[in-house]
Length: 278
Ligand code: SF4
Image 1: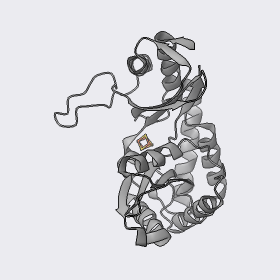
Image 2 (image 1 turned 60 degrees about the vertical axis):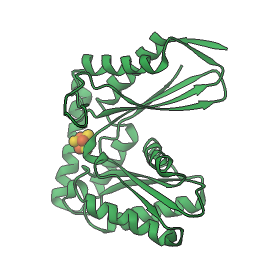
Image 3 (image 1 turned 30 degrees about the horizontal axis):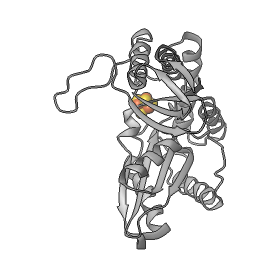
Image 4 (image 1 turned 90 degrees about the horizontal axis):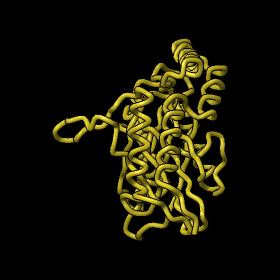
């Protein structure tokens, strides 16, 4: 049994958020640069150029890439042979608290009914998986709500099949239009239960852009859906053109014979996340 101190967890979480809030992941930026080269719509080309320039300024100054530094989402893979000294959840929350304070990041978290801001961007949303081994892997994903707000879930009928899934995803994009700060990445979950389906969709946002799904059927669906979405012509920042969607990432899970849950989680161009293994 390996022991990891709560303080080590706090410092790791703090560094992850300090870094992630300042810069989108390399793959997202490369995809935006590639979209800029191919863009045909003049307004969208200017928007993409500004995004690349914004990233350059963020890199040079250490300022956040976007003023919305998000709600802190944390994924934890806890090895079953690891013992944490202290309270793991509290150590993570403390890391989030320190990162948003030291980074002067916007504190966006509030009571959903009273509107009272919690003052330090906690609580984070933490997802735990217990895995084999003696390591602790932590992924930090600050999530902006311009894109989160456009996310949708549907409990389709089994008879809706692939056509129903495709219709739901395209309808979700039409409704979202330019609101989720495109170019976007779409995380899609298919199957499981209501809550697992949404979590599958969110976890797909962590997949590297450009990675190919190991499941051939899903890989084909991803390619076809990305083409269909971009053919809608909504474009970068909703300004027209073929560069609305940088990637569609789909995961599936067995589900009940009576249902067909589908969830779509939008990720804006500020695709920020980072991981560390302790
Ligand atoms: S949706 Fe993304 S890009 Fe838009 S304001 Fe929020 S974090 Fe920034």
